Image (cartoon, rainbow, N blue to C red; front, top):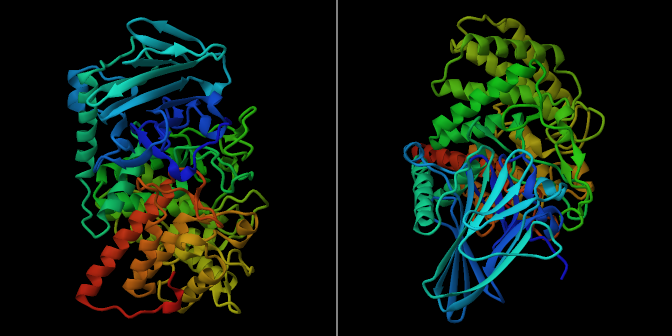
Length: 622
C-alpha cells in the first residue's frame, strides 16, 4: 500500500530543548533531526515516504486511539483501545536536571519509547528505517549482540536498543522490523540515541528506563509549575508555554519558528518553507509572553541571544539565524523528494534570510524595551548597538522592503514596516527618558523628528479614507492583517475610529474559517491558508479595548478550537476544510494564544475596577 503522510493536525511533538520529533496518531515517528532542530533528518518520511526514515511502534490491526500529554509535561501518551484490550505507548525525549547530570551519565540525546499492554492481549508491530542525512547517503549499520544497532552518521552515531529482537529487512539497507505479543501487564522498552562523542552513553533499559521517564516527567512539571498565569485558560496557556519550551534551543536561548520544514501552506502547492530557524521578528512577542508568564530566565536568555546575533550584523539586521546564531544555510531543494502529499519542492534552508525587512529593527528595540521595563539593564555595547540601529532607521526608514510576509517579489513600501520603524525610534526615546542610556547619549531631538515624519507618512499614505482602513502599502488600497498590530505597538489605540475601520475591513475581506484571517489579499489569491496568529491578533485587539470583553473571549475561545487533540497549533488553516496546514507546531501561533490570554486577564482586572465602553460593533463577532 502506498505511503500517505499523516494529517498535519494528527502530529504531536516530543523534544529535549535541543531537537524534536514529530509522532503521528498511529505511533509512527515521521520526523526527527539530531543533534539540532536544523540538522539533517534521520526520519523524514513526513515530506516523502517511508524510505526517508521512520520509527513505527503500535499494535497490529484496527484500534481506537486516544492521546494526551501527561499533565504539565511534554511526555506523550497514546492509548490504543478495542474491546477487551488496551495498549499504552509512552514517548519521551529524556531530559535531566543539573543534579541528575552530576551524579549519573546521561545520553546526549535519547528518544525513549515504552509500550505496555494494560489489558487483554496485543500483537505489536515495530518498523525502523534509519535514513541519516535525509536518506541521501549510504547507510552503514553495525549490530552488536549486547549494545544493539549502531548507525554511523557524518558527525556522530545513532544507537538503537530494545527489549525485542529485530530482523533486518532484506534488500533495504537501514530497515529493521519486529513482531511480538504482549499480554496484560507486560512491557517492552526501546531506546534510540545519538552521540557525537565517544564513548557514547547508553542508559539501561528495564526499570532504569522507567526511572528516566519519571525524571523527565518531574523536570517538565517543575518547569510548568513556574508559570504565574492563573486565569481561566490555564490549560491552553500551559500547553502553549510547554510547546514554546520544546522549540527553545537551550544552549543559546534561541527559539525556532517550528520543528518542521516544508509542510505546505497549500497542499499540493509550492509554498513550502524551512522553519527550523530563529526569526528576529519573533523577538518582541516572545519576550513579552515569557515575561508575562513569569519565565524571566528564558526571556533574558532570548534577549541576550538576540543582542549577540544583532551585534554581528548591525546596523542592517539579518532576518533569521540558525539556533546557535550563525547565518542560515543557502536555500536548496531536497533531491528526489515527493513532498508532503505531493507538495514540491521540499526546501532546506530559507531564502528569506537575504531579504531586507525593515520591521525587524522595531521588533528588536521593542524586545529590549520590554526587558528594561522588567528590571533589565543595558551595558555600554548594547547602548552603542541600539544607538547605531536608531541612526540606521532615521536614515533608511523610507526604503521599500519585503515586509513581514516575506513576499518573494520586488520591495514595496509596506505600512507595517513603517510602523515598526516608528516603534524603534519611539522605544529608543522612551529608554532615554527612563535613563537606560547612561554611557551613550542619544540625539532625542533627531529621533523625535524622524518619528514624527514616519507617523505622518503612515497616517497620510498608509490610510485609505474611502475604505476607512489602513492599507498594506503606502498609497495602496488592499487590507493587510499585520495592521491588526497597530495597538500592540502603541501606534494607535485599539478603540480609535481608524483602527475600528481597519478591523471591520479585515472581517469583511480577510476572514477565514476558525476565526483566523488570510494574511493579505495577494496571498489569499495564491491559495494561502488562514494564518492562525492573525486570529489571535484580532482577539487581542478586542481585548485591549477594541471591543466588549465578551466578544474578545468569544473570538479567543473559537480560536482555541484550532488546537489539535493534544493542544498544538499549526501555522495555518486550510480555507476550505479548516484542517491544519503549514509547519508544525508553529511558535507564532502559540505566542499569539498566550499573549491574548494575558490581555484578556488584564482587561478582566481592569473591568473589575471600572467598566470599559464597547467600541466595536457586535456584528464583527466570529
